[in-house]
Image 1 (cartoon, rainbow, N blue to C red):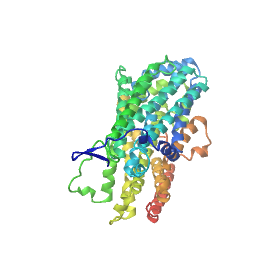
Image 2: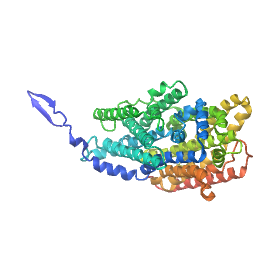
Image 3: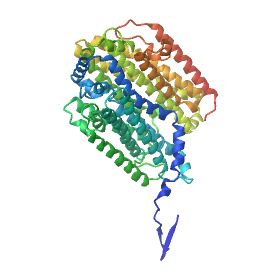
Image 4: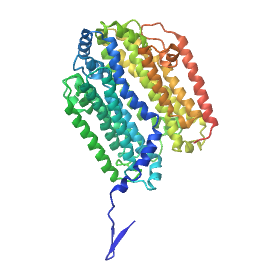
Length: 545
């Protein structure tokens, strides 16, 4: 440390701030782009092209202006649907077609949050940032590179979505408004993630802070839109909805979104300046002097690590199930006049009874979401091994099978809890409104239960990848994304049946309404057993990374 001496007193020389703090930004940006060469293009293309796909699907379904007006009226008469997706502000094709794309403002927020935290807090938690910082890399280079990459992705999404919407003959003003708002939402939440990355030494806490803020914003938007609309103006997601593309656009909504992005990014740089590498603004709590009996084995440790995540997912499934249960009675009125959309829903796995089709489709979507939880739980094994904590655990009298099963067991049982809560919420609310609580509750719980084998197939695929090729375990997210695209596009555009059969969620019985068939369930369970056994055997035989 450089000091100045005057009369026996020592003074620290002031730190010099300038371009040196950003040295190496270009090199880190290239590194981050290489590491995200698969994930980044996936979410950019998805958010850039899917809105136009939604509108094209609506154009094929709603043939006349009367169909559009009937759909918009039915949506606005259902507080549950308005809470889930937002209101419809006009009966134009663009406004009605983009209604289902309302959640994209929150979904791009999830993508940017994960991207920023992965390249900032995760790098510090793993110790890589400290090693890189020991070279000629500036203090702010990592955060700057992560923000540049994320902002570039948001900009491409904005341009691509606007061009795609304009390319299907929608007005230029509305297309530009939607694209600009979608990109601005991603930028605002990237700034929130940058602030969250400065809060704690753990990436999981940083994600929890950012997702907690996003969940609060979504709840405020949902309650506000379903009520008098006041609370929507407190939420950044509410600002996005109130841009009103194709319905007398409110361009000034971009001002608060960009302001939040700039303010949070500036705050992140200020907080980064005030802390040491690897530390956080929130001090870690000291642990108990004596471990609880539940921590005496790997299962107790796995539960301790995973319980917070399961609680958060459980709350989300319960809330979403409640919203879906409240929307069932209105779906019949909304779709009754459109045979085309009934055919689409039935092709996506429903039955001839429209409300049963809606329940089937809703719980299939929740099954896919439960797969995401299960994959993230298995990936904790990958994180523990990469951080070398698994090596310390296995150095004791713990077998590899017992250690792996401690996390895999939670990955298998967690979706049971999630789908039970969602199915119960749907069944109770729908049953009370229909005057048949026992019957509807049983139907919904059965519809949720048959999704479990399909969820476990994704779990088993992740375990198999981890067992044989641990370096590529995150590819499980790509497998899930591909299956979602096949599931949705195959139903809407009629992909070949053999391609659709690759998705496990197309095979469970279409409950309620259809007869239960055990054969698909048994086939799926057989695949699960084979893949789980192979993955655990591979983990037992290979070296730790």
